Length: 314
View 1: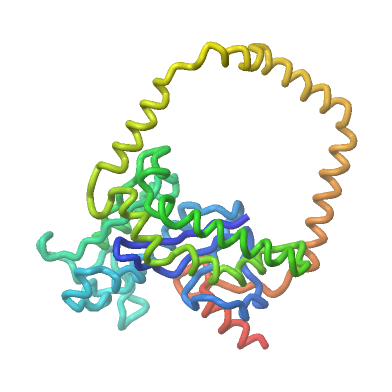
View 2 (view 1 turned 90 degrees about the vertical axis):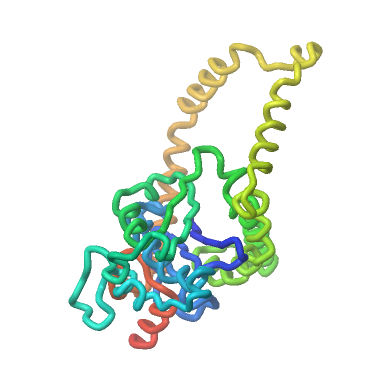
């Protein structure tokens, strides 16, 4: 299991991706091809959480700054503008920290540099620490409504299907070459090609256009909802009623499942135990020296930092 965090703006630009696994990568990952600034994070579920979301926000804050049209037009430097780095630390004195960026205190709202971050409603995105951090750095966060990402999320509309297709292509290539266990190391090693095929400027821009976020328009979302509403209004042909499943299908399915469970309990228990032993043995065999987070980060490490640790060790 792996979670990919990727971003894109209306100009078709992106920031280095994040990959979240259940365990930190080992130093043997140092030789994989990829953006040196891509980061590997760790969580018990391989999904994002509030801690990882906050660390990602800090990285996004710094990496997205130079891609802002206002920043490019005014030729602003991040640390000079805010008077601190993305971790609220003094650029000249690492021991000095701030509660909020000193460089923007007292500035009028119209003089500030604002950025808009459109994300889904995942609970980690709604944590107080995440929201507070974004407010301090003038990042406006727009949370999409539940069950609306398929029509409002630019990455869902323009990028992720291409990303999935590229992933499937790499899996098929691996199988043709006899690699029957496409593990997380293999995935990370091929991710640069997968990412480059999915997060192209054309795909990202198309996603923003289809969602109606940029150029701003309500037409795509409204059209989708109208089509869905008209579809549900269509009457069901009476002749099709005979094809509907029996009303007692759920009790029958429940009884069948219970009967199978009673009959094959011992067999299923043995299979689960065997799978657990195989996975445990596999991880013992593959375990190597793990990479360690560097600096202010606790839950992630970049490919560049991983290579540096590998060089020091070997």
